[in-house]
Image (cartoon, rainbow, N blue to C red; front, side, top):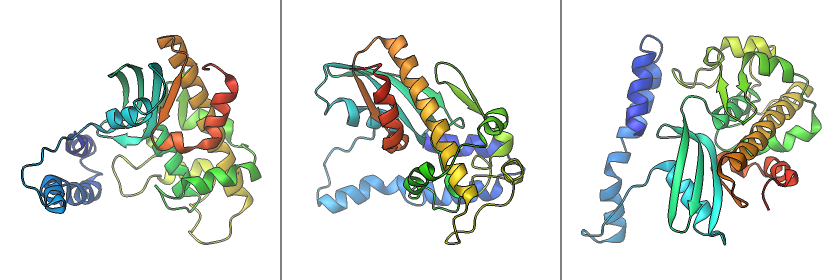
Length: 250
């Protein structure tokens, strides 16, 4: 499924995505087809059965099955796994039923785009952005909602892909993104300015708004009283605290 996304995305943006395709193919096909052999070698056992689970099913299972709940709504939000970026699930007993939002509309990738723009390392520096947010003010909020993301009342959202490059290039943002924000990305390890503080506050506020609306929509859709959260965005403890404060679940 991940290979399918890489190939289809590259075809969709063929004239712009050669570098993206080359890097993605080398990363994916250079290692992942040989996982079974590597696992058997590490276990020193040739006949051990090995099963592969889809990314968001694994996320949902990791949150729901160890929980003390017999029934619960499950929200998985991250960058992307195969094609899935956001999953709404209902767990009951030993079963999980999942509805998905497909790539490239991703809250995780939006947060990572701001992580990159503010000069932090993607997939590891997002916590720095979250920690920086209280020092700023979300002064760009109206501009961002006008140009970058459309958020519905139930938490569903769409990104304006004109401002991003993660689906066709080697970086997350492009010149249109830089223009709307007001300049080039911060160079890593340079001084953090008021701009980065305000941008951190902005993307944190947007993330909290989407998460709160997603959970409220999930409550209305599934009627569950318990909630499990999973995925990279669910590591945003500040957003989780805002969700809990609304008391949609108990």
